[in-house]
Image 1: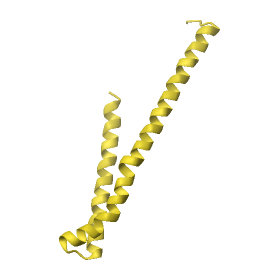
Image 2: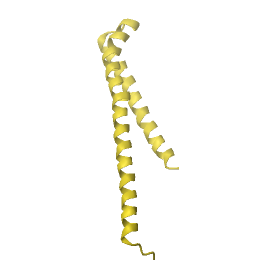
Image 3: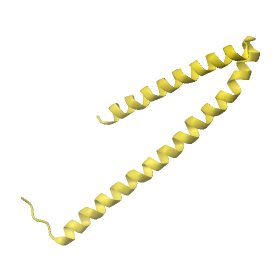
Image 4: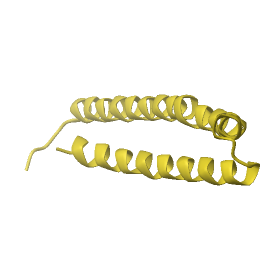
Length: 92
């Protein structure tokens, strides 16, 4: 068993604290970038896509809404799958 003096313990606690604060900072940056890069464009696409598909494919509003909703749902499932895959691969 290794015995550490107070100075070494304070140093180790400082290193752990700096690692935790760095992790928290990276987490905040990742969350913010996710919101800006994923959620906002998806909301914009949802509001623009229905009238656009109505015009492009001569669909009714109900049919365009259905297909745009299905497309967004599939995109959401794919993005969750990608995030899970990245988490699994980053552990290696």
